[in-house]
Length: 247
Image (cartoon, rainbow, N blue to C red; front, side, top):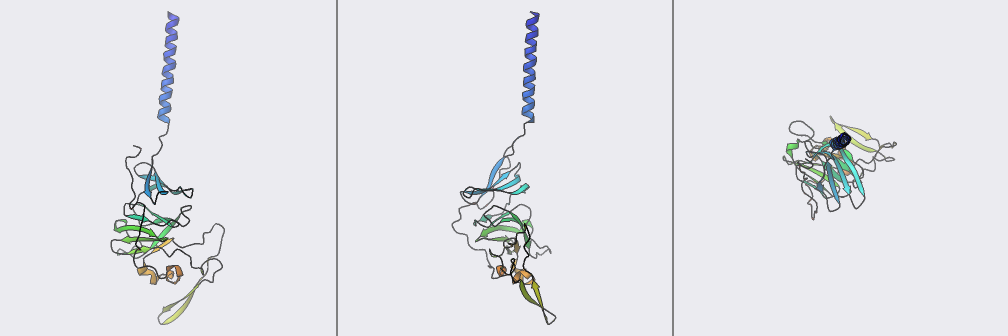
């Protein structure tokens, strides 16, 4: 009888230890962050957000071209204003809380930050997020509309050949106190790892173009005075996110 009790007790101890071990294993097992599609360009391209409370990593996926690339490594929050991206080669992704884009000029393979240049009523060179009305990307060109009616836009989708490696550079004249002063901008000198293609990486308000050297670049000349009409767009017009995903 004593042997039976000892054996029974040993069995209980082993089972208890096994259960405790299993519980600890479950407790220590990391929970996977939720992944959700927050924007669709069309039926084969979309943006994925990985993280809780609609904040985290942002990825671009193009099933047709076999592209999966990281846009933001952390802290991304969705753009809450109307957003239409009707271009394929040039993709510009806005985010919450500021006027700015991360852009790709190679169908989403690689990404770069784009700058904003303008003149707001408060003296800043970019609009406040609350003043943004919409972001539209069409014909490989991006447009950011504000409630004051200003349109920040990227250049035409090509580089001024004079500024590219081997180019002649850009000559222009500035008039100052009745004198014409010649200026010259050198062509870009190639360097290892340097991306010499500059188009699409700067958004400017055409109202200040006459005060910028950009006015002399061919890709900033004859800019549109309104946002082109978007026709037959199959994608979403807003980003969407479920705050409770994974909770």
